[in-house]
Image (cartoon, rainbow, N blue to C red; front, side, top):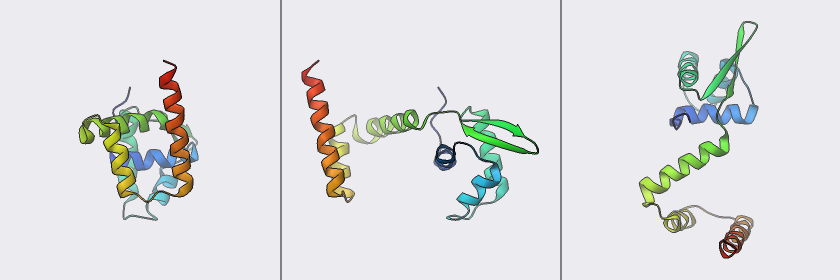
Length: 127
């Protein structure tokens, strides 16, 4: 499996996951709406990401189309697992407690969280 992406690489991957594929120009235009970055920086990052096997490049005329080579869900799982181990010493309870104490959670989100907990409890009983 590819290495976990850096913060900048993750920003690019999020764009590629949303759009499915994009040129460097398209990625640059989206990122430059919210931060100061040059086209050549985005190009270099995407070239590095190709070398790291995070994205694949396909020539389409003069332009190159990039698409994520790693799945969003697998990347999220890896990053959360790494965070869980590094920051919370493997304690899911501490992670959830921290999230609930520091992030405003809507009533709908709380309802969904309760459903997930109930489902996990049922699955644990059936093991």
